[in-house]
Length: 216
Image (cartoon, rainbow, N blue to C red; front, side, top):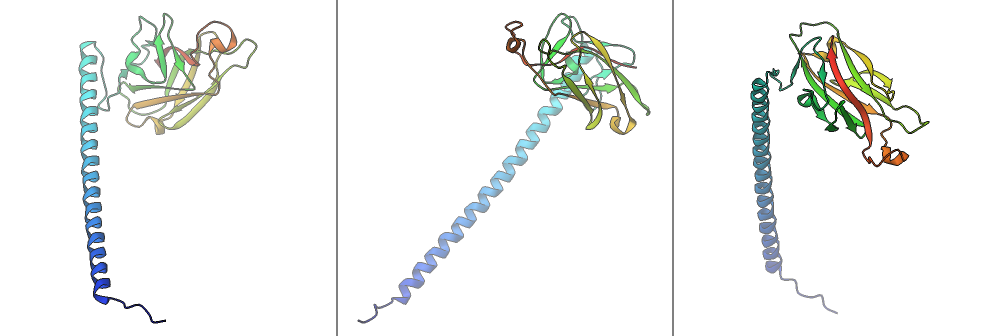
């Protein structure tokens, strides 16, 4: 049986066409990557502009209400001037995530994570003592929830939350304060809803109940 004839010219032409297609695909991929990079850069520019305008608007709104803001966009809290979070309080600017709506007494955190933001007034170094007036929610005969407090990534302390309003004191070291802008995160080990305990129909999973914050 004789071997089939091999057309060398046809094979070379096919290889050439394949190389051309591969080169075209590589060029298209480079163009797509370049477009994606430009789009990503544009998105970053737009996002930075949005954040800058938001900070300017916050500062303008705060100025109209007598609120001062840090250059980082954090509301300034004055020493020995408690901030209240109830319906008639002034705490809305200090809420940074994980909160429900204000009630007459204060505000409940929703879920197991809440955060506050504030800037220290004229901070010049040293330790700062922070007092939070809080409460917690637990099932009848259940264990009290425990909350971890973390400021700018530094673990400060853990406290169990009683069902009645009570004060918790936190001591912030200079290493975590930096230039004075503070992001205070709270992580609750157990967040449950009153509905799940049969107490009432409130289906919110309640975290930290916040009444007030004060810098001493």
